[in-house]
Length: 573
Image (cartoon, rainbow, N blue to C red; front, side, top):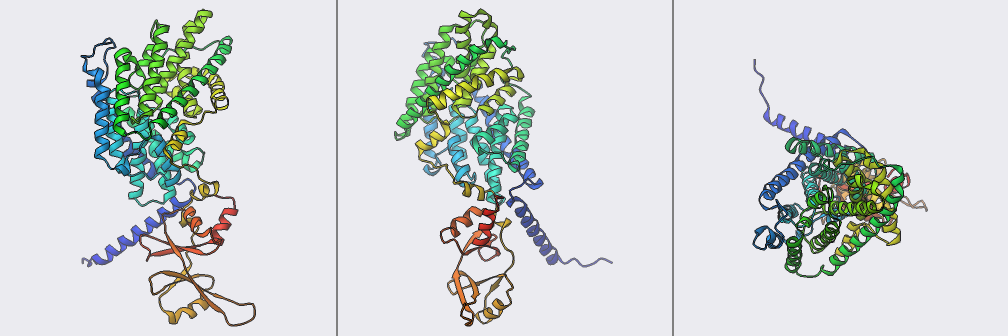
């Protein structure tokens, strides 16, 4: 005998089950602690972010097949169409910028930092198309910019977009965003550990265990995706690195001082150009950057591109000292012109090229006095790359780990650390250098500073603290009776203007009858964090907010100032 199937009952059961699991998921994600749900979501979002980055890389490889300089022997040959590519790229970037909305024109690492700090990593999806195509044109037309800029922006947008679509709590949206960044960096450079360190050191700027595991899983996903498509390639493993004797370390210390001065000069020049051209029309800035890059390309085409050509010259068999010096100045000017005047792209690639040239120059000059240094030019180039990235971006550990993974040689660790320390001290104490990203934020007028108490409260969702014991009264006649029987539960009532009020009975000290008090309270979505509740309640240091799910009519809890203050004083946030 076949039992009748009640389809309505099944549909209701499915809805109840979905609601239960959604609530359970949000409860887990609202906590500031590691959970399997958080890791699984980070992994899923990282797969999507990695696919976006791989698509970008594949298109760039295809474009470079036709546009990238294949030979470096067309000096002065204006008829070679590749020499004019930066001008064409400037026009294409301007066209894409004009087609997009002005509201979504901001992009790059500094902008991502701003959104992570102040907006939980929520980056408008509309900015992704502009970043994708503008960066593709910039890299495809040989501007001196890096690939990590679009990787970070696109990885962040991809993950944060999915997190918002899944309606995750804001504190976990930020974790998904930085996990997407890690996936983007790892998929770009096949350097998963460097991606983790970069995100913790530059983007998040703190270490929390519930951040670490999602970021690490995302970096693994990005690296595996890169290896599946491009193979397990270490981009700088062609550099021959030998263990340097300890008696060379005094020379390395002098090299650290020189590198610190060079990094400070580069940062100052770049920020000066950025501030000067900030209010110029976009087309003027882009054409000026394209013209400067074109002129440099006509004389020294090795200075173009991300930095691979410069590194190639630095590690060549018999590099010319005069050529390397000329190429160093050309590479610095090309990079400052491109980044400072608004060409979309990153800094790491060009900094690698500049650092490699500086390291090679230091090695060749030192070899004139100490011939025994000549075999170690490759190591000096890697040391220069590590110091330039570490000092300019205020990320010494990320720089060291990145070069370790990209060269696949652990012998760079000790000398690179030894050189980076004096370089960092010279730049940051001697020349008052600051992280270039935060200086860019200052120039753009974007805030990134968050008070410690607000930053701590942002790590927990409101569902972790809300009191689920409450009563909603819709009938005035029953109000008094409900209040008498509330037994510590919050009582809410909707007034004639459809505004929720908190209702309570206050016992006067003169033994009179209880006084009925009521005051309107504000509502917050259950995806917000404790920081939003703090912003509402802190001015009066009293009161409550109600927490709703999906719509304000669906109230799921109440948070009082007393409970919030107790949470703050507990030291657990």
